[in-house]
Length: 69
Ligand code: SF4
Picture 1 (cartoon, rainbow, N blue to C red):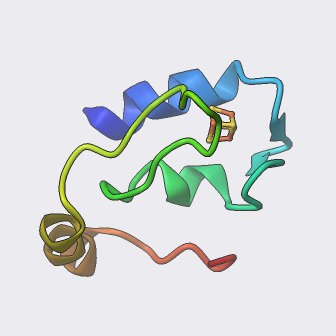
Picture 2: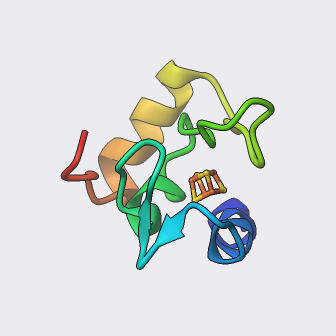
């Protein structure tokens, strides 16, 4: 699943500060679940998996909101 793959990358990232991304401030566990999200690095370590409109439909049904955005 895409979220698990993203989480593996974040878990080994130098910008993972106890579960929060130091670059964007998001809670990583929530950020990786949202399809329209991407890593803020240039180039990103992982990218969005779909369009924003597609992701919003999915996120409205399956994803807890990230409280830092
Ligand atoms: S989103 Fe990117 S910069 Fe942030 S912790 Fe994950 S891999 Fe690192």
